[in-house]
Length: 329
Image 1 (cartoon, helix red, strand yellow):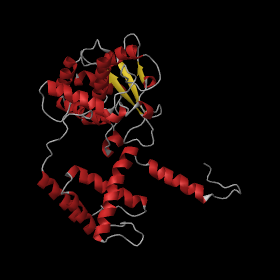
Image 2 (spheres, one colour):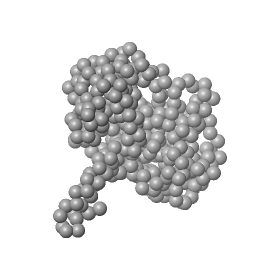
Image 3 (cartoon, helix red, strand yellow):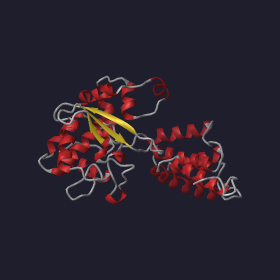
Image 4 (tube, helix red, strand yellow):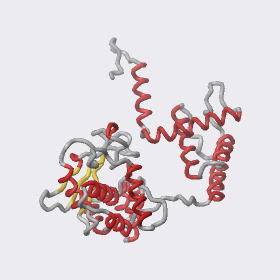
């Protein structure tokens, strides 16, 4: 949309529309959804507290209102979720042009710490899928079955790629977008006959709302924990038809919940207690890497975790990243 009007002057209406679009795109859709719920609850709370301004907005909110809000939330919500609610309140202030309400709120910080101490650690903490548990998954599958081969390939890619579940699953077939989700064309190897390194193109993620994309390098592991060979085997079965990278024989993609359910069934059958989910692969890979004394900067590069120091001064080579696969196996 051109912000210049037909007369050559600025079209402020179009300019505002672009501004609101950019402001909205500054957060991932999933983050918007989480924050919307938090903001709605905060507005309702402030209305009952008599803390709404004449405009009908709770912004700007004072520290006392925020302290009472988190105290109210602590009755039914865990500390980790309360932090998400506060992030939603911060986002609401930013959207309305106010400063960050959480800055220099020493009382609020102490109240939140107090809530954490009183609640303790949640028993439902998600556990990591480590190399040992990857072998448990492998033993439970019959890789002669195409769907089992697909599931194993997805598990290996999630583990060796340090991927978020949303980066290699699709909620359903109609929601698939070739500009966002993984497809066959996003997988490349250095040699089709004897591949030693695989490159995965991640086109967008939770922390990449502008979809700049990035490349993940995965090297050959040790049997049976080798994402390169298993994924190439799966691709032969799948073919090069357009659509999601991972597909059941029915033509449907595995969603995050389907992947989690299958994973939990395997762990229950193996009598392994704990809360596992599709995110457990992303937790497990750095756990194993740290146990094997992989340098922090390589772990952060593979997982694409932000760190001012490492982002400014460290540039991990693709060879070093690919070599991690042998250590993780």
